[in-house]
Image (tube, rainbow, N blue to C red; front, side):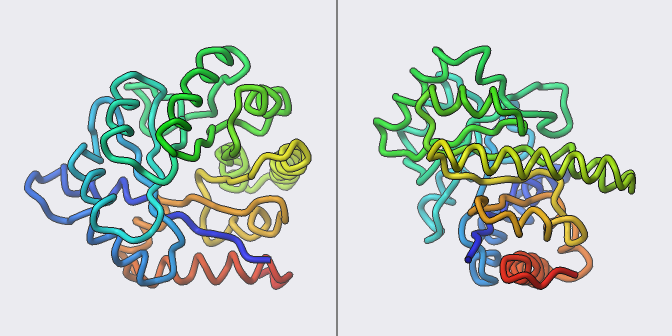
Length: 249
């Protein structure tokens, strides 16, 4: 009945980089998240290094006891860094320099052969690979065929529906996430989810039994301004676990 919470600490680095210097330290944020009950730490090393930097990834691996999930584009540069750093897991995401945040899932079906080769290389380093994809059945089938053991369902459309407070749209987007999770689990894939999840919208997603991990970052870092990072992580974990046992608020 349990569900894991991976805390993405990217935007602690965003705040640091806005002023320069080394404060606030994303590694310290990871330590706080761990002490508050996080089950893993996620960080996205982008090509333009807009927030997380190479040294952040190395320090996270060296100084944090929790599993490190390295979000990255499927490039030769990132593959080399994975071979050096040795994270527990890698989540392959699409990347567009002009986007503010990841805008959608990978087109696995359109680049299946390339991704299959990339996944084999990552697996050879002892890394568990996930693919960040929209809740579309053909993309899930392609992920399975490419050899990924894990998918992470992009919940951005569900988040946008919740923000618009449109009941039909919320129901439709949630149904797509639920259907995708059930379909992926039926293929033998481990199912994660994330993007745009908040205290208000997380519980329906956390209650889907096939989903075993949620990765949440921007909202938790934003709430930390008001309630502290440890408390925001604790509250998210409480809501997730309550949803898992049928206590929805």
